[in-house]
Image (tube, rainbow, N blue to C red; front, side, top):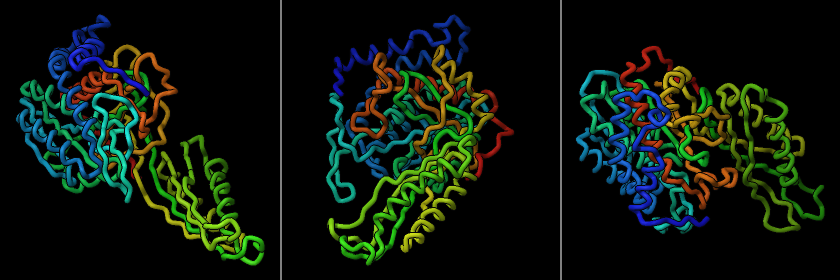
Length: 449
């Protein structure tokens, strides 16, 4: 992908203008504008050039999970300059900022993740990452291939907008800058360190950039992103000469049968009308010579589910299927199922309450309800006991075919900066609207997983 940029000042001006910051989406549609929403728009005009600069700086200096030292320092310095209460080193490299409004009210949390991936960037940008590091014993590039640089910049901008109107905010905003989302552990580490205490929020919001329509906001109630569990299988046969397979037990043939057998779990054994599920074997290793049947084969895969009960049922069926196929061929199989990311579940009542805010932030037709996404997040570590709402911000460049856009985690992943104002607008308005509504006194905790 080749992306050509004009000078920094011209690009910033173009982004601000394209976002309609001179008039909010509501005003552009001839609708009455709420005074606080209008103030947010006014303050965004000053903040957006900084958001773009932060995003580019963070993009050029990516850091892997639990190594976000430079990024955390940038965030901490900014939050302190805004006069917020700051808690560094939460969950190792996480940062929390607390903004106490000038009026009494509930507490709401906003979350942004900070880590990058071991990916060598192939997008030609003036601020392209040239960082190299060692990962799993190999030298690799480091890139914000999942767009977390945008998340951090959006949240820093949100914090500055809200800090500037502190006296009119009815409650407290807790900004959570999280490390190690890619390892699916940073959120839980922050929770373990008390990220949701003192003060305890009654709801939490999070966003993720996505290669969908520029500036769109999309989500759904209930299961939004999948649980991600790992399957590790060792098939133990009996090694022998490849010319006489009957004198041993061939684990390669049995492994092939297991791959096909596992597909019947999702296609024939569960009710796919209630929730989708995916079972994938992504790695098979066995043998080192064409005329030797090896002693064993190692297989690694992933299970993606959206329903807690179905998740348990699939685990049982996967173990039984693997072991029975192995036994049928005279082999044995050891199956290890590792619990990974939880199901990202949006609280239905919270989504219903905040949908008008998201619609207003996205503009006419920009808010969409979408199908479940089989990718996984560790945001649900924050929503085990409080309701949460997670949504996507579309960053596909306008005029380009969305189907051809590089996906998150690709070395060609590209986020159009013209979407950043919508991200700041959505986060600031969600916080303000939630607080002045009094929160959700009757909200139920997320479903057990």
